[in-house]
Image (cartoon, rainbow, N blue to C red; front, side, top):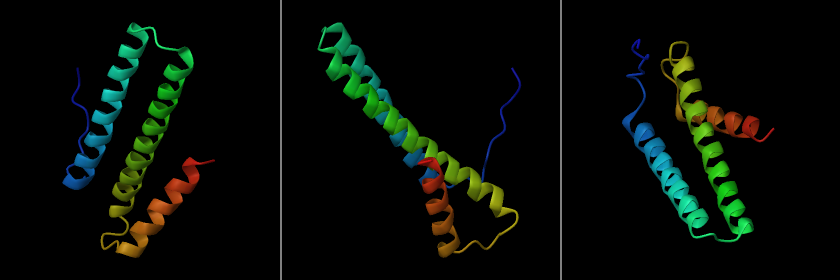
Length: 97
């Protein structure tokens, strides 16, 4: 298997935030498995699946923000906090469409 590209410029804080989100989703998945094993009401399971879907969507937004930051880093090496905020707001808005 070929080596996957890495992104050494990804800040450690971003990595840790995304990992926390993924671990939370992993815990939700285990909880849903337990609910099904215990034969809990399908409506309750569906509610938990929707919570997982929303958590995955939020994780996608975070990764999209990281991707745009990395893409812009070469063009805007001195990206300030205001530009970073604009990136976050734009990605968040687009994710709701």
